[in-house]
Image 1 (cartoon, helix red, strand yellow):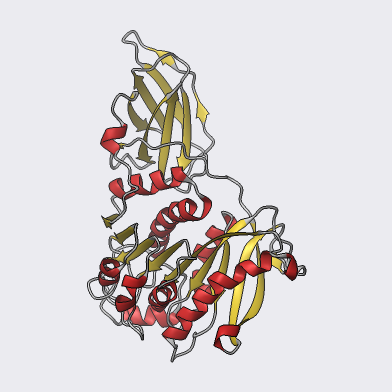
Image 2 (cartoon, rainbow, N blue to C red):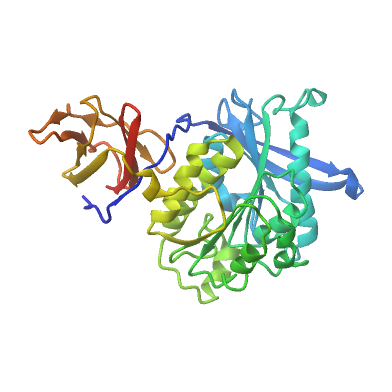
Length: 394
């Protein structure tokens, strides 16, 4: 068993994301953009469904949507790890499959992305009574793009305030026209995810200039330590060949980079597309304490850890032989409750011994974690109207 590798006390507010996991449905739709002489925009759409399969009924609920922009010579199959996670959490993911050849038109790709952000919601209305998505779409949407798609996402988001947020994964700045030059016209919240080992689109020439130019009221730049350009997605021969010949300095695995990416973009999307304020607290607290990233923060909706932990219940803890022992001081009484979450906000089941009070007035609780896999977890401890929390690694 791994010992605890770091110990940082952190408070975070109520974090109650739905634990429901949805099946993944799939359909293909080609749209026509009347503003561009009915230019064809092909898509592959993955959505929360009653069962897994093609053209199956959508699950009960109303879901926000994500328009996803692929990298150069890459298709939606390169991103199934990420898209499957998002769909299972209650998002519709729309892959725009245009401009996938060896000579993509970045300006057209950006226009396709912008068009889909506006057009997809029309499938929610009564005029589309045959749509799988009738009454299923929440008019909250994001553009997420990787590499060339990240740069094209900037082109698609410029002057478009109808989009709620944009996420760019190692975006290429040297698109035609330049994503760096267009970034000052992007005024929606933006998350730029970089990787320190990326030499395909180096951060200093691509990701950081895009971030600096953004006019977003809230923008964050985070760099995954030891990450690469292609590791956000599944293995892809075109991207992986380019990376292997570019001199990238990667020190983490594909699975580790995908794990970091999911851990941060999920709460970001939950805040902007699902109005989950607690997800914002989780994102910014994790941003400050995660050993896996470095970051720049251009947002005002951050949390102040030191301010929050004043006058709260005091907790110390240690982990040994799958037993997490909490020692709680300043409690109002013995009626202490504890909740355990993974970094996606899913409540974890565990066994707990009854708490007891020592002769010094400290309440002790022991939690058995033998049924929980290795990883980072979040703990909340409640005492009537007081709360505190911390992270630990099993």
